[in-house]
Image (cartoon, rainbow, N blue to C red; front, top):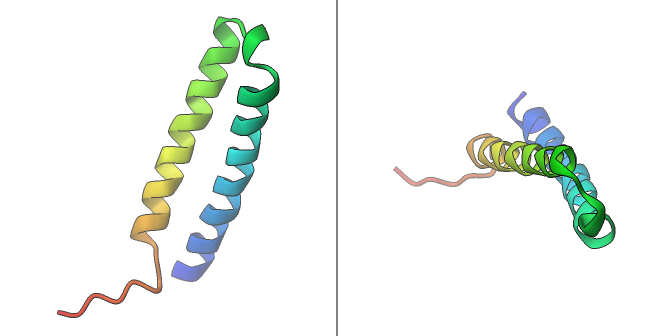
Length: 64
């Protein structure tokens, strides 16, 4: 189950990186306040997914 969450979060993060890069590279000059809110929301979701990826890493080798 941990691997499914891990790989699903990676896939979602890659998709969000594609969306964010598309907005920044091609549509940044024509954004209004709603567009900046959309971009901010996508970046915050990407940060949340990064935290989930960090916590759900099944290959984390902690020697205790």
